[in-house]
Amino acid sequence: MSLDKQKEILAAVSDALQREPPETARLQLRLFQEEDFSDFAAFMLQKEQQRLSGNREIDTVEEAREEFDRVLHPGHPPLDFAIVLKEEERVVGRFSLGASPFLEQDPMLREKRGLSFSMVLNEAYWRRGLMTELLRTALGWVFAHTDLDFVNTGYFTFNEGSRRVQEKAGMRRYGASVYERDGKQIPTVEMLLTREDWQDAACSLITE
Image (cartoon, rainbow, N blue to C red):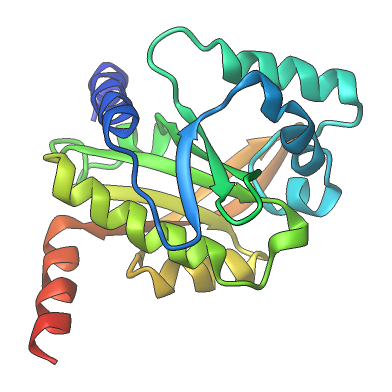
């Protein structure tokens, strides 16, 4: 799938997310707002979060502010959404859409419509099932509100937590790739959920 096609898909999904964002019992997605900066900086500066995710290293509040300004004023389309914990009215993470070289190069996916995404959660809220809750809802939303054939994400091979979350949401291992960060190449597992697999899972729940 060409980069131009991915950008077209990203714009359409971003617009749909803004019109009718998915929401769970505990979480909601919305665009970032200026008053979210302190919450944003809190999780973007966390070192373990940086190690496990694909985010660049951010060491200072000033660097966090630069990243936040990019998120807050992206032009069109906005690709980053705030994950809000409703009971605290606090931003606890970031849900991001993105183009992927993997999707552009893979021969099986080249002719299909799909997108990549990533999620980051404040370390203080780990192990509460929040990411699994959001991911299941977000994936269902994608297939119910768009014409995408698949959704893709991945995890570093040492990140067992992400693997478990993605598998609980129904995603399956598709292949392997390498993620380049700070001059290093990090082995990565690519995960996929197709529309067919999502529909099969939904039917199974209905018949149980």
